[in-house]
Length: 491
Image (cartoon, rainbow, N blue to C red; front, side):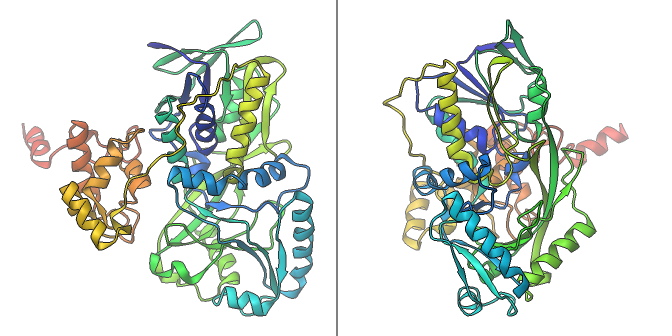
Protein backbone atom coordinates (compact mmCIF):
# COMPACT_ATOMS: atom_id res chain seq x y z
CA UNK A 1 0.00 0.00 0.00
CA UNK A 2 1.34 3.42 -1.02
CA UNK A 3 1.52 6.26 1.51
CA UNK A 4 1.08 9.85 0.30
CA UNK A 5 0.99 13.31 1.83
CA UNK A 6 -1.67 15.92 1.01
CA UNK A 7 -2.81 19.28 2.29
CA UNK A 8 -6.40 18.48 1.27
CA UNK A 9 -8.11 15.28 0.15
CA UNK A 10 -11.32 15.66 -1.85
CA UNK A 11 -13.56 12.60 -1.85
CA UNK A 12 -15.52 12.45 -5.10
CA UNK A 13 -14.78 13.65 -8.64
CA UNK A 14 -18.20 14.68 -9.82
CA UNK A 15 -18.79 18.29 -10.80
CA UNK A 16 -18.61 19.48 -7.17
CA UNK A 17 -15.34 17.70 -6.35
CA UNK A 18 -13.80 18.74 -9.67
CA UNK A 19 -14.80 22.40 -9.19
CA UNK A 20 -13.33 22.41 -5.68
CA UNK A 21 -10.10 20.81 -6.95
CA UNK A 22 -9.73 23.47 -9.62
CA UNK A 23 -10.41 26.28 -7.17
CA UNK A 24 -7.83 24.94 -4.71
CA UNK A 25 -5.28 24.45 -7.50
CA UNK A 26 -5.07 28.25 -7.74
CA UNK A 27 -2.95 28.05 -4.58
CA UNK A 28 0.28 26.42 -3.47
CA UNK A 29 -1.36 23.28 -2.13
CA UNK A 30 -0.92 19.54 -2.42
CA UNK A 31 -4.44 18.53 -3.49
CA UNK A 32 -5.53 14.90 -3.92
CA UNK A 33 -8.90 13.83 -5.40
CA UNK A 34 -10.18 10.30 -4.81
CA UNK A 35 -12.89 8.83 -7.04
CA UNK A 36 -14.37 5.35 -6.66
CA UNK A 37 -15.28 5.09 -10.37
CA UNK A 38 -12.84 4.54 -13.23
CA UNK A 39 -13.30 8.08 -14.56
CA UNK A 40 -14.26 11.52 -13.32
CA UNK A 41 -18.00 12.07 -13.78
CA UNK A 42 -18.18 8.31 -14.34
CA UNK A 43 -21.05 7.68 -11.97
CA UNK A 44 -23.52 9.31 -9.64
CA UNK A 45 -25.50 12.45 -10.35
CA UNK A 46 -23.07 14.18 -12.72
CA UNK A 47 -23.09 11.46 -15.37
CA UNK A 48 -26.83 11.50 -16.11
CA UNK A 49 -27.72 15.13 -15.60
CA UNK A 50 -30.05 17.33 -17.63
CA UNK A 51 -27.31 19.92 -18.09
CA UNK A 52 -29.37 23.02 -17.30
CA UNK A 53 -27.66 26.16 -16.04
CA UNK A 54 -30.54 27.39 -13.89
CA UNK A 55 -31.36 31.07 -13.46
CA UNK A 56 -32.33 30.60 -9.80
CA UNK A 57 -36.06 31.26 -9.52
CA UNK A 58 -37.14 27.79 -8.44
CA UNK A 59 -35.36 27.32 -5.09
CA UNK A 60 -37.08 28.55 -1.94
CA UNK A 61 -35.70 31.92 -0.76
CA UNK A 62 -33.30 31.65 2.14
CA UNK A 63 -32.04 28.17 1.24
CA UNK A 64 -28.49 27.32 0.30
CA UNK A 65 -29.86 26.13 -3.04
CA UNK A 66 -31.19 29.61 -3.80
CA UNK A 67 -28.06 31.41 -2.61
CA UNK A 68 -25.51 29.30 -4.48
CA UNK A 69 -27.62 28.96 -7.63
CA UNK A 70 -27.72 32.73 -8.11
CA UNK A 71 -24.04 33.07 -7.22
CA UNK A 72 -22.98 30.14 -9.38
CA UNK A 73 -24.64 31.13 -12.64
CA UNK A 74 -22.54 34.32 -12.69
CA UNK A 75 -19.37 32.26 -13.13
CA UNK A 76 -20.48 30.19 -16.09
CA UNK A 77 -19.65 32.25 -19.15
CA UNK A 78 -16.11 33.09 -18.05
CA UNK A 79 -15.49 29.62 -16.64
CA UNK A 80 -16.65 27.77 -19.76
CA UNK A 81 -14.67 30.13 -22.01
CA UNK A 82 -11.51 29.43 -19.99
CA UNK A 83 -12.09 25.67 -20.03
CA UNK A 84 -13.11 25.36 -23.69
CA UNK A 85 -16.53 23.98 -22.75
CA UNK A 86 -19.58 24.55 -24.94
CA UNK A 87 -22.21 26.71 -23.25
CA UNK A 88 -25.41 28.16 -24.67
CA UNK A 89 -27.08 30.83 -22.57
CA UNK A 90 -30.33 30.46 -24.45
CA UNK A 91 -32.67 31.05 -21.51
CA UNK A 92 -35.38 28.79 -20.09
CA UNK A 93 -39.16 28.78 -20.22
CA UNK A 94 -41.56 27.45 -17.60
CA UNK A 95 -44.66 26.70 -19.63
CA UNK A 96 -48.22 26.89 -18.29
CA UNK A 97 -50.11 24.49 -20.55
CA UNK A 98 -53.45 25.69 -19.16
CA UNK A 99 -54.77 29.00 -17.85
CA UNK A 100 -55.22 27.66 -14.32
CA UNK A 101 -51.44 27.20 -14.10
CA UNK A 102 -50.61 30.83 -14.84
CA UNK A 103 -51.04 31.72 -11.17
CA UNK A 104 -48.05 29.57 -10.25
CA UNK A 105 -45.88 31.44 -12.76
CA UNK A 106 -46.54 34.57 -10.71
CA UNK A 107 -45.32 32.69 -7.62
CA UNK A 108 -42.12 31.69 -9.42
CA UNK A 109 -41.63 35.23 -10.69
CA UNK A 110 -41.86 36.70 -7.18
CA UNK A 111 -39.64 33.95 -5.81
CA UNK A 112 -37.05 34.67 -8.47
CA UNK A 113 -37.08 38.37 -7.69
CA UNK A 114 -36.60 37.61 -3.99
CA UNK A 115 -33.66 35.35 -4.87
CA UNK A 116 -32.09 38.14 -6.93
CA UNK A 117 -32.64 36.68 -10.41
CA UNK A 118 -32.55 39.46 -13.05
CA UNK A 119 -34.70 40.00 -16.14
CA UNK A 120 -37.47 37.50 -15.39
CA UNK A 121 -40.76 38.08 -17.20
CA UNK A 122 -44.03 36.34 -17.89
CA UNK A 123 -44.87 36.15 -21.58
CA UNK A 124 -48.19 35.46 -23.29
CA UNK A 125 -49.16 32.71 -25.76
CA UNK A 126 -48.40 34.71 -28.90
CA UNK A 127 -44.79 35.47 -27.96
CA UNK A 128 -44.35 31.94 -26.61
CA UNK A 129 -45.38 30.45 -29.96
CA UNK A 130 -42.99 32.80 -31.74
CA UNK A 131 -40.14 31.61 -29.51
CA UNK A 132 -41.20 27.96 -29.58
CA UNK A 133 -43.25 27.09 -32.71
CA UNK A 134 -43.66 23.42 -31.66
CA UNK A 135 -45.02 24.16 -28.18
CA UNK A 136 -48.48 22.95 -27.17
CA UNK A 137 -50.77 25.43 -28.98
CA UNK A 138 -53.05 25.49 -25.91
CA UNK A 139 -50.27 26.91 -23.72
CA UNK A 140 -51.42 30.02 -21.89
CA UNK A 141 -48.00 31.57 -21.29
CA UNK A 142 -44.58 31.05 -19.76
CA UNK A 143 -42.04 32.42 -17.32
CA UNK A 144 -38.99 33.45 -19.35
CA UNK A 145 -35.56 33.49 -17.70
CA UNK A 146 -33.01 34.79 -20.23
CA UNK A 147 -30.11 34.34 -17.79
CA UNK A 148 -30.18 30.53 -17.97
CA UNK A 149 -28.72 28.03 -20.42
CA UNK A 150 -27.40 24.57 -21.20
CA UNK A 151 -24.03 22.87 -20.82
CA UNK A 152 -22.65 19.33 -21.01
CA UNK A 153 -22.39 18.23 -17.35
CA UNK A 154 -19.77 15.53 -17.79
CA UNK A 155 -17.82 17.65 -20.29
CA UNK A 156 -17.66 20.48 -17.76
CA UNK A 157 -16.59 18.07 -15.01
CA UNK A 158 -13.79 16.60 -17.13
CA UNK A 159 -12.60 20.09 -18.04
CA UNK A 160 -12.59 21.24 -14.41
CA UNK A 161 -10.68 18.14 -13.30
CA UNK A 162 -8.18 18.31 -16.16
CA UNK A 163 -7.46 21.96 -15.44
CA UNK A 164 -6.92 21.10 -11.78
CA UNK A 165 -4.44 18.39 -12.79
CA UNK A 166 -2.69 20.78 -15.19
CA UNK A 167 -2.23 23.06 -12.18
CA UNK A 168 -0.79 20.38 -9.91
CA UNK A 169 -3.71 18.50 -8.37
CA UNK A 170 -3.61 14.70 -8.40
CA UNK A 171 -6.62 12.53 -9.26
CA UNK A 172 -6.71 8.86 -8.28
CA UNK A 173 -9.45 6.81 -9.95
CA UNK A 174 -10.99 3.49 -8.84
CA UNK A 175 -10.14 4.42 -5.25
CA UNK A 176 -13.10 3.91 -2.93
CA UNK A 177 -12.54 5.50 0.48
CA UNK A 178 -12.82 2.80 3.16
CA UNK A 179 -11.73 4.73 6.24
CA UNK A 180 -10.93 8.20 7.54
CA UNK A 181 -8.62 8.14 10.53
CA UNK A 182 -9.46 10.68 13.27
CA UNK A 183 -7.22 11.17 16.31
CA UNK A 184 -7.75 13.70 19.08
CA UNK A 185 -10.73 15.15 17.21
CA UNK A 186 -8.66 15.91 14.08
CA UNK A 187 -8.62 14.30 10.62
CA UNK A 188 -5.31 12.52 10.15
CA UNK A 189 -5.51 10.07 7.26
CA UNK A 190 -7.70 8.82 4.41
CA UNK A 191 -7.56 5.15 3.45
CA UNK A 192 -8.45 3.34 0.21
CA UNK A 193 -7.62 -0.27 -0.77
CA UNK A 194 -4.37 0.95 -2.34
CA UNK A 195 -3.53 4.26 -0.64
CA UNK A 196 -2.96 5.81 2.76
CA UNK A 197 -2.98 9.58 2.50
CA UNK A 198 -1.83 11.64 5.46
CA UNK A 199 -3.82 14.88 5.51
CA UNK A 200 -5.31 17.38 7.98
CA UNK A 201 -8.31 18.23 5.75
CA UNK A 202 -10.96 16.15 3.97
CA UNK A 203 -13.69 17.58 1.75
CA UNK A 204 -16.68 15.27 1.43
CA UNK A 205 -17.97 15.71 -2.12
CA UNK A 206 -19.06 12.09 -2.51
CA UNK A 207 -22.53 12.81 -3.89
CA UNK A 208 -24.86 9.86 -3.45
CA UNK A 209 -22.40 8.34 -0.99
CA UNK A 210 -21.66 11.49 1.01
CA UNK A 211 -23.64 10.20 4.01
CA UNK A 212 -21.49 7.06 4.07
CA UNK A 213 -18.31 9.16 4.03
CA UNK A 214 -19.66 11.35 6.83
CA UNK A 215 -20.37 8.27 8.93
CA UNK A 216 -16.68 7.32 8.69
CA UNK A 217 -15.95 10.26 11.02
CA UNK A 218 -18.97 9.69 13.23
CA UNK A 219 -21.42 12.13 11.63
CA UNK A 220 -24.83 10.51 11.38
CA UNK A 221 -27.30 13.41 11.29
CA UNK A 222 -28.26 13.13 7.61
CA UNK A 223 -28.76 10.47 5.00
CA UNK A 224 -28.97 10.52 1.22
CA UNK A 225 -32.09 9.38 -0.61
CA UNK A 226 -31.45 8.47 -4.27
CA UNK A 227 -34.10 10.00 -6.51
CA UNK A 228 -34.27 8.27 -9.87
CA UNK A 229 -35.03 10.20 -13.03
CA UNK A 230 -35.57 8.58 -16.43
CA UNK A 231 -34.87 10.16 -19.81
CA UNK A 232 -35.24 9.76 -23.56
CA UNK A 233 -32.59 11.12 -25.94
CA UNK A 234 -33.62 11.87 -29.52
CA UNK A 235 -31.61 11.96 -32.73
CA UNK A 236 -29.80 15.19 -33.60
CA UNK A 237 -32.13 15.73 -36.54
CA UNK A 238 -34.73 16.82 -34.00
CA UNK A 239 -32.57 18.92 -31.72
CA UNK A 240 -34.07 22.14 -33.03
CA UNK A 241 -37.65 21.26 -32.19
CA UNK A 242 -37.02 23.18 -28.96
CA UNK A 243 -35.03 26.42 -28.83
CA UNK A 244 -34.96 26.62 -25.04
CA UNK A 245 -35.26 24.21 -22.12
CA UNK A 246 -39.04 23.92 -21.64
CA UNK A 247 -40.16 23.20 -18.08
CA UNK A 248 -43.69 22.48 -16.94
CA UNK A 249 -45.03 24.12 -13.82
CA UNK A 250 -42.99 22.38 -11.06
CA UNK A 251 -44.21 19.99 -8.39
CA UNK A 252 -43.22 19.62 -4.73
CA UNK A 253 -40.48 17.07 -5.53
CA UNK A 254 -39.35 17.98 -9.03
CA UNK A 255 -38.94 20.72 -11.59
CA UNK A 256 -40.98 18.42 -13.78
CA UNK A 257 -40.49 16.61 -17.05
CA UNK A 258 -38.86 18.99 -19.47
CA UNK A 259 -38.18 19.10 -23.18
CA UNK A 260 -34.78 20.58 -23.96
CA UNK A 261 -32.14 20.82 -26.64
CA UNK A 262 -28.73 19.64 -25.48
CA UNK A 263 -25.59 21.65 -26.03
CA UNK A 264 -24.46 18.92 -28.47
CA UNK A 265 -27.57 19.23 -30.63
CA UNK A 266 -29.85 16.39 -29.49
CA UNK A 267 -33.31 16.66 -27.99
CA UNK A 268 -33.74 15.38 -24.42
CA UNK A 269 -36.91 14.73 -22.44
CA UNK A 270 -37.20 13.87 -18.73
CA UNK A 271 -36.74 13.30 -15.90
CA UNK A 272 -39.48 11.88 -13.75
CA UNK A 273 -38.84 11.59 -10.00
CA UNK A 274 -38.97 8.44 -7.88
CA UNK A 275 -37.31 8.02 -4.50
CA UNK A 276 -35.60 4.62 -4.29
CA UNK A 277 -33.27 2.79 -1.90
CA UNK A 278 -30.55 1.36 -4.13
CA UNK A 279 -27.84 3.93 -4.93
CA UNK A 280 -26.70 1.84 -7.88
CA UNK A 281 -30.11 1.34 -9.51
CA UNK A 282 -30.07 3.19 -12.83
CA UNK A 283 -32.47 0.82 -14.56
CA UNK A 284 -35.35 2.19 -16.60
CA UNK A 285 -38.93 1.00 -16.26
CA UNK A 286 -41.89 0.80 -18.62
CA UNK A 287 -44.07 2.82 -16.26
CA UNK A 288 -41.38 5.43 -15.68
CA UNK A 289 -40.66 5.93 -19.36
CA UNK A 290 -44.38 6.17 -20.09
CA UNK A 291 -44.62 8.89 -17.45
CA UNK A 292 -41.79 10.78 -19.15
CA UNK A 293 -43.49 10.56 -22.53
CA UNK A 294 -46.84 11.73 -21.17
CA UNK A 295 -45.27 14.71 -19.45
CA UNK A 296 -43.22 15.72 -22.48
CA UNK A 297 -46.15 15.35 -24.88
CA UNK A 298 -48.17 17.77 -22.75
CA UNK A 299 -45.51 20.39 -23.51
CA UNK A 300 -44.74 19.37 -27.10
CA UNK A 301 -47.51 17.21 -28.66
CA UNK A 302 -45.65 16.53 -31.91
CA UNK A 303 -42.59 14.79 -30.45
CA UNK A 304 -41.13 12.30 -32.98
CA UNK A 305 -41.75 9.28 -30.77
CA UNK A 306 -40.04 6.79 -33.11
CA UNK A 307 -36.82 8.80 -33.26
CA UNK A 308 -35.34 8.35 -29.80
CA UNK A 309 -31.93 6.70 -29.81
CA UNK A 310 -31.54 5.74 -26.16
CA UNK A 311 -33.30 5.89 -22.83
CA UNK A 312 -31.46 5.97 -19.53
CA UNK A 313 -31.80 6.90 -15.86
CA UNK A 314 -29.81 9.04 -13.45
CA UNK A 315 -29.90 9.44 -9.69
CA UNK A 316 -30.24 12.72 -7.84
CA UNK A 317 -28.78 13.27 -4.38
CA UNK A 318 -31.54 14.23 -1.94
CA UNK A 319 -30.46 15.02 1.62
CA UNK A 320 -32.76 14.14 4.50
CA UNK A 321 -33.68 15.93 6.66
CA UNK A 322 -33.77 19.37 5.11
CA UNK A 323 -33.65 18.70 1.37
CA UNK A 324 -30.96 21.38 1.04
CA UNK A 325 -27.23 21.51 0.44
CA UNK A 326 -25.06 20.47 3.41
CA UNK A 327 -22.02 22.74 3.36
CA UNK A 328 -19.26 23.44 5.84
CA UNK A 329 -17.35 21.93 8.77
CA UNK A 330 -18.75 19.75 11.54
CA UNK A 331 -18.10 20.63 15.20
CA UNK A 332 -17.06 17.15 16.26
CA UNK A 333 -14.14 16.61 13.86
CA UNK A 334 -11.67 19.32 12.92
CA UNK A 335 -10.65 19.27 9.28
CA UNK A 336 -13.74 17.49 7.91
CA UNK A 337 -15.74 19.69 5.52
CA UNK A 338 -19.02 18.69 3.87
CA UNK A 339 -20.08 19.53 0.34
CA UNK A 340 -22.92 17.03 0.51
CA UNK A 341 -26.56 16.65 -0.47
CA UNK A 342 -25.95 18.50 -3.73
CA UNK A 343 -28.94 18.00 -5.99
CA UNK A 344 -30.37 20.40 -8.56
CA UNK A 345 -29.34 23.20 -8.96
CA UNK A 346 -25.99 21.73 -7.93
CA UNK A 347 -24.45 21.85 -11.41
CA UNK A 348 -25.13 25.59 -11.61
CA UNK A 349 -24.03 26.15 -8.03
CA UNK A 350 -20.76 24.20 -8.39
CA UNK A 351 -18.33 27.09 -9.00
CA UNK A 352 -19.79 29.14 -6.14
CA UNK A 353 -19.74 26.13 -3.82
CA UNK A 354 -16.07 25.64 -4.73
CA UNK A 355 -15.23 29.19 -3.64
CA UNK A 356 -17.21 28.73 -0.43
CA UNK A 357 -15.37 25.50 0.43
CA UNK A 358 -12.03 27.17 -0.26
CA UNK A 359 -12.92 30.05 2.05
CA UNK A 360 -14.14 27.59 4.70
CA UNK A 361 -10.83 25.70 4.56
CA UNK A 362 -9.02 28.99 5.09
CA UNK A 363 -11.18 29.76 8.12
CA UNK A 364 -10.45 26.26 9.48
CA UNK A 365 -6.72 26.89 9.33
CA UNK A 366 -5.54 25.91 5.84
CA UNK A 367 -2.90 28.33 4.63
CA UNK A 368 -3.73 29.62 1.16
CA UNK A 369 -0.98 31.22 -0.84
CA UNK A 370 -1.93 32.28 -4.37
CA UNK A 371 -0.04 30.56 -7.18
CA UNK A 372 1.10 33.12 -9.79
CA UNK A 373 1.71 30.29 -12.25
CA UNK A 374 -1.93 29.13 -12.16
CA UNK A 375 -3.22 28.63 -15.70
CA UNK A 376 -6.99 29.05 -15.95
CA UNK A 377 -7.12 28.17 -19.64
CA UNK A 378 -7.60 24.55 -20.68
CA UNK A 379 -7.97 23.44 -24.27
CA UNK A 380 -10.20 20.53 -25.18
CA UNK A 381 -9.67 18.04 -27.98
CA UNK A 382 -10.24 19.67 -31.39
CA UNK A 383 -13.38 18.10 -32.86
CA UNK A 384 -13.17 17.10 -36.51
CA UNK A 385 -16.95 17.35 -36.89
CA UNK A 386 -16.88 21.06 -36.04
CA UNK A 387 -13.94 21.98 -38.27
CA UNK A 388 -14.23 23.85 -41.55
CA UNK A 389 -12.98 22.05 -44.69
CA UNK A 390 -9.73 24.05 -44.53
CA UNK A 391 -9.26 23.25 -40.85
CA UNK A 392 -9.82 19.57 -41.60
CA UNK A 393 -7.14 19.58 -44.28
CA UNK A 394 -4.71 21.28 -41.93
CA UNK A 395 -5.49 18.86 -39.11
CA UNK A 396 -4.90 15.82 -41.34
CA UNK A 397 -1.66 17.32 -42.63
CA UNK A 398 -0.40 17.68 -39.06
CA UNK A 399 -1.77 14.34 -37.86
CA UNK A 400 -2.90 11.75 -40.46
CA UNK A 401 -5.01 10.03 -37.78
CA UNK A 402 -7.47 12.92 -38.22
CA UNK A 403 -8.20 11.39 -41.62
CA UNK A 404 -9.42 8.09 -40.16
CA UNK A 405 -13.05 8.17 -39.04
CA UNK A 406 -13.83 5.82 -36.15
CA UNK A 407 -17.36 6.92 -35.21
CA UNK A 408 -19.45 7.63 -38.29
CA UNK A 409 -22.52 8.96 -36.45
CA UNK A 410 -20.59 11.72 -34.66
CA UNK A 411 -17.67 12.00 -37.14
CA UNK A 412 -15.03 11.24 -34.51
CA UNK A 413 -11.54 10.45 -35.72
CA UNK A 414 -8.77 8.20 -34.48
CA UNK A 415 -6.71 11.28 -33.59
CA UNK A 416 -9.38 12.50 -31.16
CA UNK A 417 -9.58 9.11 -29.47
CA UNK A 418 -5.79 8.89 -29.12
CA UNK A 419 -5.71 12.36 -27.58
CA UNK A 420 -8.44 11.36 -25.12
CA UNK A 421 -6.42 8.31 -24.05
CA UNK A 422 -3.38 10.50 -23.41
CA UNK A 423 -5.23 13.47 -21.88
CA UNK A 424 -4.37 14.91 -18.43
CA UNK A 425 -6.86 12.42 -16.95
CA UNK A 426 -6.44 9.50 -19.37
CA UNK A 427 -9.51 7.83 -20.86
CA UNK A 428 -8.84 4.14 -20.22
CA UNK A 429 -12.26 2.66 -21.01
CA UNK A 430 -14.94 3.04 -23.68
CA UNK A 431 -17.30 5.25 -21.69
CA UNK A 432 -14.43 7.60 -20.78
CA UNK A 433 -13.64 8.00 -24.49
CA UNK A 434 -17.33 8.65 -25.22
CA UNK A 435 -17.48 11.44 -22.66
CA UNK A 436 -14.43 13.18 -24.12
CA UNK A 437 -15.07 12.71 -27.85
CA UNK A 438 -18.76 11.68 -28.27
CA UNK A 439 -17.65 8.53 -30.11
CA UNK A 440 -20.50 6.08 -29.67
CA UNK A 441 -23.10 8.68 -28.71
CA UNK A 442 -24.79 8.87 -32.10
CA UNK A 443 -27.76 7.10 -33.60
CA UNK A 444 -26.21 3.62 -33.69
CA UNK A 445 -25.12 3.94 -30.02
CA UNK A 446 -21.61 2.56 -30.57
CA UNK A 447 -22.69 -0.42 -32.66
CA UNK A 448 -20.14 0.47 -35.34
CA UNK A 449 -17.27 2.05 -33.45
CA UNK A 450 -16.87 0.00 -30.25
CA UNK A 451 -14.52 -2.64 -31.78
CA UNK A 452 -12.41 0.15 -33.29
CA UNK A 453 -12.21 2.01 -29.98
CA UNK A 454 -11.23 -1.24 -28.27
CA UNK A 455 -8.42 -1.80 -30.75
CA UNK A 456 -7.09 1.73 -30.29
CA UNK A 457 -7.25 1.43 -26.49
CA UNK A 458 -5.43 -1.89 -26.64
CA UNK A 459 -2.69 -0.44 -28.83
CA UNK A 460 -2.24 2.82 -26.92
CA UNK A 461 -2.36 1.28 -23.43
CA UNK A 462 -0.33 -1.79 -24.36
CA UNK A 463 -2.90 -4.23 -22.99
CA UNK A 464 -4.84 -7.09 -24.66
CA UNK A 465 -8.40 -6.38 -25.74
CA UNK A 466 -9.63 -8.82 -23.10
CA UNK A 467 -8.71 -6.16 -20.52
CA UNK A 468 -10.63 -3.32 -22.20
CA UNK A 469 -13.77 -2.41 -20.27
CA UNK A 470 -16.90 -0.37 -20.82
CA UNK A 471 -16.62 1.60 -17.58
CA UNK A 472 -13.85 0.01 -15.51
CA UNK A 473 -14.03 -2.83 -13.01
CA UNK A 474 -15.30 -6.10 -14.45
CA UNK A 475 -17.28 -4.57 -17.34
CA UNK A 476 -15.23 -6.37 -19.99
CA UNK A 477 -16.46 -6.81 -23.55
CA UNK A 478 -14.60 -9.97 -24.58
CA UNK A 479 -13.07 -13.02 -22.91
CA UNK A 480 -10.58 -13.87 -25.63
CA UNK A 481 -10.29 -14.77 -29.28
CA UNK A 482 -12.83 -17.33 -30.46
CA UNK A 483 -10.16 -19.59 -31.98
CA UNK A 484 -8.16 -19.70 -28.75
CA UNK A 485 -11.26 -20.42 -26.69
CA UNK A 486 -12.28 -23.28 -29.00
CA UNK A 487 -8.81 -24.79 -28.90
CA UNK A 488 -8.79 -24.53 -25.10
CA UNK A 489 -12.20 -26.22 -24.93
CA UNK A 490 -11.18 -28.97 -27.32
CA UNK A 491 -7.90 -29.50 -25.51
